[in-house]
Image (tube, rainbow over all chains, first blue to last red):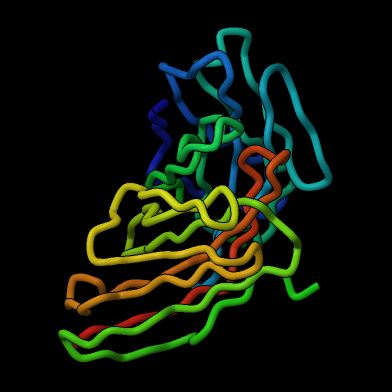
Length: 113
Length: 113
């Protein structure tokens, strides 16, 4: 199973763009990269998923270089409400196993006024 | 749609007691899973199911049982509660075609004395 490494915590300010990078050196060919957001006392919420290059939705962008050994979650113009823990997951559950279900400790993002 | 629902929200048990945490989803999702989250930690997979009648162990299955008799329900049973099982428990589900996009329930906060 691909292991991920991400910073334990990050700080930023309202209105800034925040980039959180995740390393996954042993990512497999069929693996996808998925990011979740978790607020205190709530279950994680899916943010974005990608396989290669760039994916963008209404909430965030995900940048994946050609070698796919890392990925960067980009949050544009953050607000105080973006303070949360962000998890990077790598895997492919299409085969029916538990691959891709492993959450690390995540990155605790703190947004200040 | 109610999404993923969990009951109870809070529970206090004494060591040695048994109980069942309920999880239900109304999205006709094939896959369901149970996680536990301890303070300052990420989520750890307990058990998962790829369809009715099929279950498998995750990272930390000891002390827990599951069954999947219907698509909608995936209860988690604690056979003989121990203080080490004090945690927040999350249930999640996803469609078979949506790889790692899981939908999480609100969680059950369990304390074992």
